[in-house]
Image 1 (spheres, rainbow over the protein chains, first blue to last red):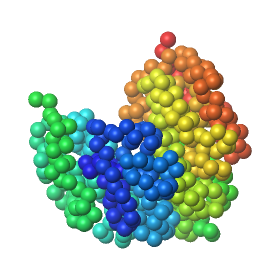
Image 2 (image 1 turned 30 degrees about the vertical axis):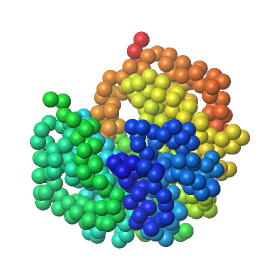
Image 3 (image 1 turned 120 degrees about the vertical axis):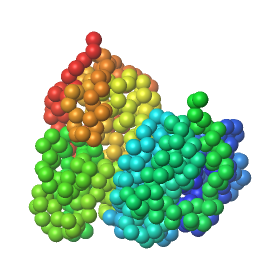
Length: 228
Length: 256
């Protein structure tokens, strides 16, 4: 169950596609949630949510017999457990710890500051500091950890798409021009490794499949309007 | 598993305690090294964790003294990341169940415990918030606990229990001693901003929280708390007197 515009939902879609996992997607209009969603898909009617197992029913008629799993990062780990040979998580414990550390860093140091910045509550310096921290974790390859797409890449990529929109369109409640300024900083030599990673990841077919750029821009424009 | 595993910890830290609990419950051979957070050895940031925090685990590499860490060992930081690492190293310990749906339940519980208990408890003890959010958080966690089951998830001690128990031990202290406020001294530069704000922890609020928790609404939760605090692993790793002394030195300003 997803909403195309939600970055949290996109994380899960990316992992499903990259793992070639068969699934059905059902779009929930968060502004107009169907009654059955809040009562039958616990706990609080959030997306993304995954139902697993139970009888094959219509998505609009979820069975009480299926397991219900929410919280995007919990779902990512669940998919890695269901598909242990997909590469979503490496087999080696130390590499797995690196993936999880990356996810934790991405959530703490990029997701948090970026949303604060977007809401006009945070500084763009915090965003840059966070990106620097995550850049420090990147190795030389195409992926966050190791040489395969993992849940670390799935976790951060939706943020990167939104980061790109913010810097290309100056969209957000921060002072005029700060979005463009952030973009300029990221083009500098200090962030070459990061920018290279972003460009690689955003070129992936799974990203292009799950990302409705115009839709997200419209949504961000509507929700993050600057006070005039 | 013959690789060395060394845990760098601060014995009064709840985050470090999570790892000690998991190691003890899994019977995992390991060494520990106490780091004085107020007097960190120079080699700690340069050789173990550039961020300077504990807990950190070093794994593998040559068998060296803990105060002479090798560049060849893997360094793993962040308490919840380390919990998962231990579950990976000891897949038959029960730290995580084998079934994917149950594993998801453990992770959901950990996420809920971090968001709804750890966060609000810290805000409360620092005098930034009333205990309302703690009660809401406890209600949320209580919903996840199954009647008749001894553990957070399933029939075995998991990393979910290890994750929440240190918070439960400290909640007990707060409700029994009414200790709380905003200290004048930061643990480290990284959390300085959290600690320099003046807090408003009114006298008696800790006791009041304790009274609420004794009510019929929280019976299931308190039973779970009691079971967790009675476990030998908890008693082994929890020096209540020292934590109380520590709280007393840090949380002394009160508001009438």
